[in-house]
Length: 106
Image 1 (cartoon, rainbow, N blue to C red):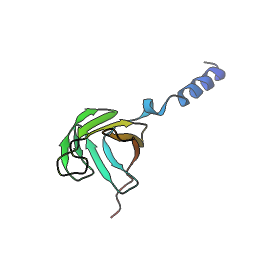
Image 2: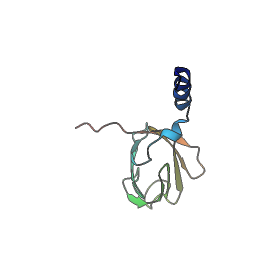
Image 3: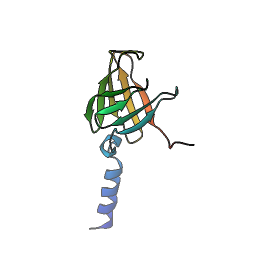
Image 4: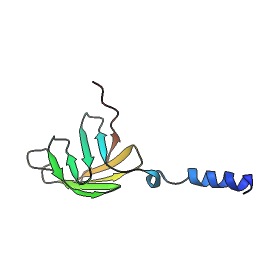
């Protein structure tokens, strides 16, 4: 394959949207206001500290806020924006972006 064709192929691959390269929504997510949640398949540890089940997709997740937490009964929808960011929308509120949590420090 000529060098120019390889260079064009490499450039095209670099221009693919980040969502196409994202791994999975599973993992720990942090918000700048100190909130944290952890998704593991259909299970979530909510920002309020409760365990709940939700609707899991490799790149999206949705659950209903459990009783006893702020916003109880609201539906939360999340969509992966890339490997390190997720868009989170609770009910009709504006969506906010959460980041993957860094490694724990003890």
